[in-house]
Each structure stands twice: as structure tokens, then as C-alpha cells.
Length: 321
Image: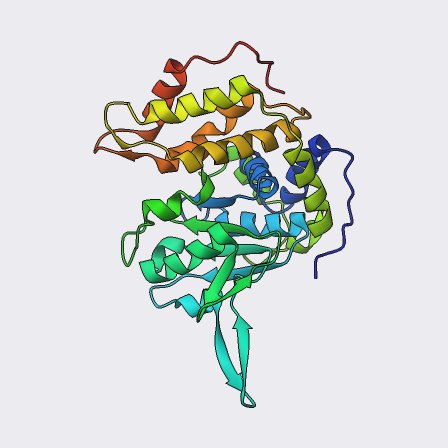
């Protein structure tokens, strides 16, 4: 059952600011990541959080689930995690077949250290992310709506690691690279209530949406106008990414759809009902960076910089925020 909405918001702009305020009760210095997680929730997309140990990846995911007012489950991936732990399994009880749901049957799933589990288990998550269902012994089981996967990975681990294949990376709307907060934010963390080393304010994060509220916010996103010039600009960005020296494989057609959805959500959270060039450029690095396959020595950021510099933007645009 979804949590009761305790803190109503006046608009999606207000929702964005309230979300940062609530999550800052436990995670300080990650406001941009909070905004992107909210964009992903509105855009029905999944998020990959990457960063060093202790950069609050897991805590940020848990706080986001509280803020959304949604059911939350967490799975800690290890080399021996089985697909059935994710999807569920059929069992016989009292002579009758019974389906036991796995952890994916929730609204927000934290897939912790996704690169520590083998490809077979990673693939079990793929259908859930893309189709929002799982198939057990030929029978499909629909997942709850909303369904958001927040996966984490530590790029500095090299033992028993299983790199995500391109097909799975392409299912993530965003890849957000977290770094340590600035010095002032790290000092402010010392003032947060703790029980020993554990944060003690997670329960103080008030839900802002709930399932019904999230559906209503998504309807606003779906009504956001995407001008033809902006749509063609997105297509041009994707096609240009496939023709840059050092790029083995540019971004996919799916990436264009994801870029459009994220841009719509970004526009709505900024108080606009129409996508602008600024929205596209704001979210493009997070949507496109992880979808590029490059030759050794070539940087994703350099490729995206070249693409955005060389693709002419349509004239119709307004200042961001």
C-alpha cells in the first residue's frame, strides 16, 4: 500500500524544491541528483547511480523512495544472487501451484551494486525494466505501477565484477555519476542526527506524491508540448553522435525517446509546458553519456561537447529557468 501523502505541493516547481528540502534531511550536497531522480520518476525511467564508496548512493535511493511515497525494496547483488530472487518462483503448496513474487514486485527497487552479479541475473532484471513484467514458466506477471529501478555501482571495484552489457545500459534513462560533496556540505553532515554511524532522519523524509500523485504529475508531463524544431534537434544530436571520430557506436533510437521524455519532465519541473533547447542540453549528458561505445582514450564528455557544439540549435528558445 502506498504511503499517505503528508506534504502537498502547489506546483511541479514547488515539488522540485520540496523534494530537495526533504532529501537534504539525510543527504546533503546532492541537489542535482535529487532533481534528476525526480525527472526519472516522472518520465517513467530507471536510473544508474555510479560513485565511490560512501558517496550516499544507497541512502539517496532510500530517501527518494520515501519522498515519492512509494513501496520500496532493496536487493544487495552478489556473485551468487539468483534470477529467482529478483523475479520470483512457482511453488506447490497443499497440492496447488503458488507464485511467490520476487523483489521486483514493488514501486521503487534499489538494485545495490548491480555490477557484482553475473549476466544471467542482470538479464532477469532486463525484462522487468523494459516490459514492466516478468515471465515465469511461460506466464507473464505484471509489475506494480509505478515501477522505478535505482541501480548503484562502484566503478573502483575490480574483483568479482560483471560489467553491464550495452543492451542493459540502454534501458537506463539516466546514468548519474555521484562524487563526494563539497567541504561545506561534508561539514553540515556532522550536524545530522545519527545513531552511532547510521543516519537517524530517514523516517523524517515526508512523502510528497504517493502513487496517485505521481500519476497526476505524469499526466502533466504527457501534456507537455514538444515543438517539431526541438524534436528534430534531438534526432540530429543522436545521428551526429554516430559520426564522430573515435565513436564505435553512437546513441540508439531508444535514446532519442528517452531524451524527449526527460526533457519534458525537466521543462515541467521548471514551470514550463513546452520543451526548449535548454531542457535538451540540460539532460543530454545524463541520457546519452552511458550509451556511447568509444575507442580507447576517447572521452564521453569530449564526444558530447563536440556533438552539442556542432549540431545547430533551433532559434526558438528561452533562458533556462
